[in-house]
Image 1 (cartoon, helix red, strand yellow):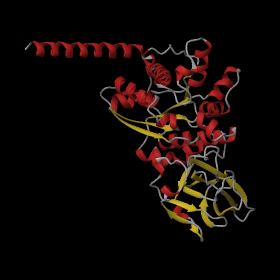
Image 2 (tube, rainbow, N blue to C red; image 1 turned 90 degrees about the vertical axis):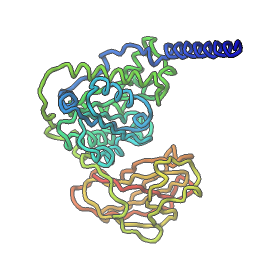
Image 3 (tube, rainbow, N blue to C red; image 1 turned 180 degrees about the vertical axis):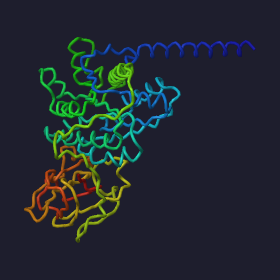
Image 4 (cartoon, rainbow, N blue to C red; image 1 turned 180 degrees about the horizontal axis):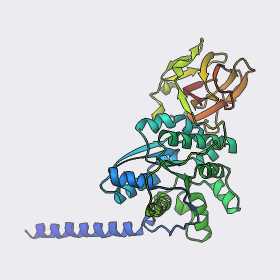
Length: 404
C-alpha cells in the first residue's frame, strides 16, 4: 500500500514538473513575443469591404494563397488562416494552398487557373513571389512584372470583387539591398503592379530590416529565407494589422476598379498551361512517367507520378501549334538537363538552356519562356534537343507547355 502511494506521488510529481516545464517553454517561445510591427511597411490601398461582408453576411469564404515554398510551408499561411477563423468564428472557410516550392511569378501566372481559379471564385487572395523571382528565377523587372500582373489580372477578371494582399518576404541579398537604402528589383517590380491595381502590400522585407536596425530582431531569430515560426509570426501580425484596419472602415460591397491599360501589354494576363498531348512528336520524344529510380538526382514527390514529355537524345524534335503571345515550358531540370532549340513560325532556331544553378543535385521545377512578345493569333513551333549542353546529358522532362 505504501509503495502504491509512493508511486502515485512520484507520478504526480513528474506530471507537475512536466506541466511547469511546458508552460515555461511556451512562455519562452519567441513566436509568442514578437516585436510590435509598425505601420511604415504596411501599405493599405483600396477597400476590403468585399471580403468582410462576404465572411460576415454569407458566412462563407474562399481564401487562396499563391507563391513558392514560403507559401507552401507551414508558415505565415496557416497563421493567417487561424486569424480569419478567430475573427469570423461562424464562417465556413475554404482555404486553398497553391504554394509550390521554387516556382516564380511567371509559373504562378501560368498555373493560376489550374491551382486557384479551378477551386472557385476567390474572396481574399494572398500572393508572394519576391524571394523566388530574386534568387530562383533571377527575373528582370520586365519578367517580374509580366508574371505578377498576370496573376493579379486573372484573379480580378475571374472575380472583380476579390480582395488581394501582396506579401514581400526576404532573403539575405534582398536584406542587404534594403540596408543600403535601395529597393530589391523583384519586390519593387511587384510594387509597381500593386500600385497600378490599387492592391495592398505587406512589405515584410523592409520591416525585418527596420527591426534589425532597431536591435529588436536578428536574422537568426527571424529564421532565414524560410522563416522560423518567429519570423512567420511577424508577417502574420502585419497581415492581421492590415486587415483589421481595413475592415474598420464602413462601405458597401462593390467591384474593384480595373485599370484602363495593363502595366505591360505582354503581361501573362491570359497565362495558362498547355497539355503536352497537344504536341506532334517525332522519334526521340515520349510521354511517360520517368523511371525516377534509375535517374540520378533528388526528386520531389509531387512530381514523381506525373506523365511528362521526355527526351534524352540530341536531335529529338517535336512540333506544337498554339495561340497567343507567349510560349514556354514548365519543366523539371535535373543533373542531366539539356538545351532546347526553338523555332517559332519558321524563324531561326534559338537556344534555351534547361539546366539551372540548382539542377546539380535536384530535379528542379522551373518555367523557361521562349518568347513572350509574339503577335496575337495562331503560331507554329518546332522544338528539338540541342547538341549543346551545360550538363553531361541531353534530357528534357516537360510537364506542360506554357502560353499566354
